[in-house]
Length: 265
Image (cartoon, rainbow, N blue to C red):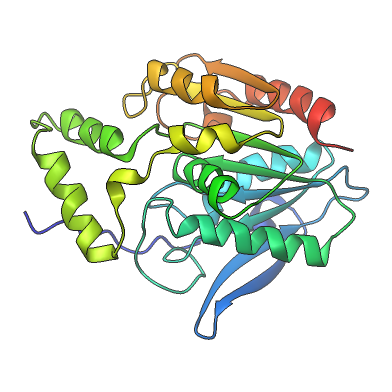
């Protein structure tokens, strides 16, 4: 009834654990807030992929996909959203203010590595933040790769209650209302399906066939509304999880083909 307290996700591993060279960067948001990122360079690089993690996670969760991208010849920038890992803060808005973090990371990349094609990759909440950043912050990457974004926040909240065997109505509505009051936003309007038509760049949308938090129909709805060239990939035997770990060969094959065609290299 009073809400859950989830400890701030910490980074206990680094690219060094996968024998990857890296530098730690701090990207200022305001005078007292900043997000932390790891830059893993590839030599030579076909482009750079900015990577954004899921809810209740940190950038260390992206290490294995980053290694796969490094092997494909792409530099990466793994970003901690505010409230996670090495970034300041302790709370989350499930992709709303995190979209500003995406925009800040993109601006930073364009200043630091201006000649490299830029691809955005997100997992769950990270995908949602990317979609919102494109729609509301005029972020314009060369391409986007999205894993398991929810279509509407109210819908994914209902799925959470259902997964616990609890009635979703009116609990989901009450939870979003109270979260809106706490965070000073309207959570009922946080709907990636409404952001999707603003994505005119090439998009790769991946999802798990057994995802209980985002249904196949919801994924299809988002995919249908993406406005640019697009590819949909269904990962068999996977749920709502990091898909590169569920099916590394299939994931790498699909990502490599997409990047070769659409990354702008």
